[in-house]
Length: 438
Image (tube, rainbow, N blue to C red; front, side, top):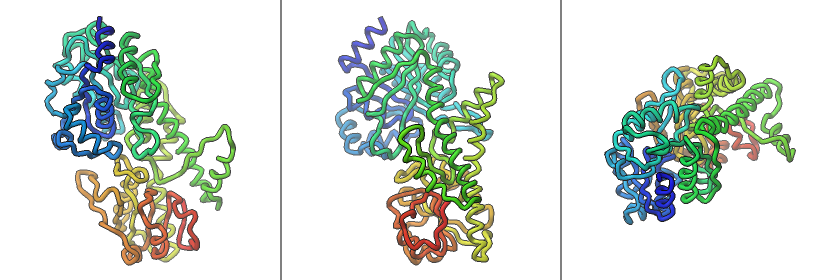
């Protein structure tokens, strides 16, 4: 009867939805569910986020502020830190962070704590879906026992459980939460049918059902490991091409003229964001449980993790050609967000570049039109409020680490003593005698 009841509630838009974690994944998902006509409650342990949502104030770039305000004012969306309201919802999506710990191993504390809180108030006839990126097996090996023990309910009989990996690309102008295809894997075919129906009612995209949560979990890891490996390949080739005096950027431009069998990936100072730098660590950690070493994946991770240090070494060489040591030089880093035109700096390689520069004795500052300050190692680091020709001219070297379109690169090229462009944003600028490209 659970399946029929939930499907009927989805059809009538009477099902109440809970979204745990109101960050880059959770808030856009909560907004889309509310826009689709489902009364939605957002849960978050950060009181600041809860307060902002309840005031209709947006803090995520992929959410339209006016839509959020309208949904809150109309009573379709609210937020709370009180998990007892789980008892009032029928469909629960867990969208909490899954970082790495100090030893580069999966930290599933947020997932575990969320499951414990849900289990206290989980009612019969509910469905729970994990969206957080994690290692294969998390849904059935971690969540299922916690939910069953804490609630006294039986998975598949009293409640449904599944996994549907988040697919969020901050700043993507084409694909948002609403129009990105969804993958669903669940414990049992009835659960899969209900969860797929819920997403189909919310999104303007296909919902692809797989045979189990583990398949969906592995699928998410594959998506991002694929990118990690290919970026590692071009980063390694970039290092080789520099030694050979060949432009890796020109090589890629030539290769991508092939209409089949090739997809362009580009080098840079390293990997950023919540998924691509972290997911391979989840897989390699889980693989060791089976006595298996993911050698190709681990090799790409070594290359990508080493790119910030390589970029600093290249910067040092540029300074040396002008008889300037890295120690004591003034360096301006342009961009600390992990990708262009967003405010998200999670795992940004630019932060590692700044750390290494400062550890080497350089006097390093940064400017980012989207990120006025960032938190690192428990400290707040403030950037420059603006850059002008006079400010740029005061630095021995400018390093471009994020390709923001709001930066006047013509001005930078005109006034900078030297520029190390790790993103090739100055490719069409001439003359460029003071510019060196990764």
